Image (cartoon, rainbow, N blue to C red; front, side, top):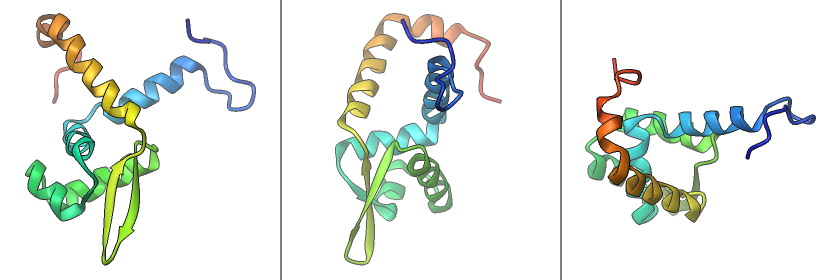
Amino acid sequence: MPQIVADRNTGVTAIERRAKLFRGFADPSRLAILDVLCEAPLAVHEIVTRTELSQPNVSNHLRCLLDCGLVSSDRDGRFIRYRISSPRISVLLNDVDALLDVVAEGVEACDNYREA
């Protein structure tokens, strides 16, 4: 069971940290970017091609993912290649897919989290 009281050093509870992490995953564009980065490190133009998102959209979400520590970047000549920061992210996304196999009907029927 996660610690509910605030960490003395950060003032943030384990539940709050978990919620903040899940907000990083809560955008379809960010999930699309993470999906393609789970396959291989990619430059922005490659992410744009594979996700069919606009370049400004990809750049904006990559900045968010970098700031949150979910992706890392490495210079490769004149390009910057982005990659998931931990293989556990791929495991988590696979676990989410497995969980959805069980609860998808309820998730799809839920009106609380409809996109605007």
